[in-house]
View (cartoon, rainbow, N blue to C red):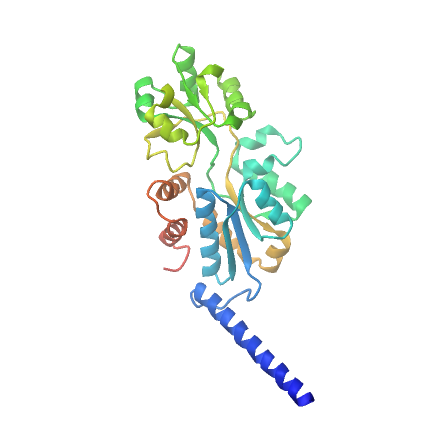
Length: 319
C-alpha cells in the first residue's frame, strides 16, 4: 500500500513540475526568452477604461515583460479612479495608473497652489500616499492631461484667440460664446468658475450646453452655434477636428500628470520595477501622447500596437 501511495505522490509531483515548467515556458515566451524574475508571482497591472489609460497600461505591461517580469495584464480593468484605487489598496492589483491632480484631491485641506506645478503636485501626493497608505508613486510623465477650453482654428485665427486671456478680451468686448461642456466642469472650483474668476469673464448660463457626449466633434460642426468647448488637453481629437487648446497661463486647471502607483511591499520585493517605470513615463511628452491617443481614437489602431510602436521607437523595449 505504501508503495502505491508513494508512486501516486511521485506522479503528482512530476505532473506539477511539468505544469510549472509549461507555465514558466509560456512566461519566457512573453518575455522574449529572458529568464523570469518573478516566476509564479506575476505583477498585476491595471488602469481605467479610457484611451490614454489603455495605451499607458499596455506600455507598462510590455516594458515589464521585456525586462523579464511575469505580468498579469488588467489594463482597461476599472471604471473610474475610485474603483482602481480601491483595488490597489486592497491588494487586488499591484500597479495602477492615475493622475497627480486627482490624487491631490484625496488630501484634506491641500494647498491649491500645489495643483499648478508638475513637480510639487507629484511630490505632495507621493509623500502623502506613502505615509498614509503604503503606496508609492514611482514617477510621472512630464505633461498634463487636464481640463481646458478649445476653439476651432478658424475661430482662433478670425478672432485672434489663442489663450484664455484672449478669450476673456473677446467676451468682454462683446463677442458671443456658446460653450459645450460636461456637467462637472460647470461647478468645479478649478473648472469654469475658476477660469471665469481668474481671467475676468462670464459666460451666461443660457449660453452653456451640458449633457454632451462628443464636444470636439460638436464644436467642429458648430452644433447649436457652439464656438468653444471643454476638452482634455491630451485628447487625440485636437488635430482631427482642427482645434486650438487655449493656453491657461495662470494654471487654474490642476496638473494631471499620469503616474504609475505601486504597493510598497511589491516594490520592495521587486525594486527593479522602479527603473522600468521611470524610463517609460519620463520619455512621454504632451505631443507624443496626443499623437498616440489620435492613433487609437481617430485611426482605429489598437492600444497595444500603439504602445509597442512607441516603446520600440524610443528603444525602450526589444524590437
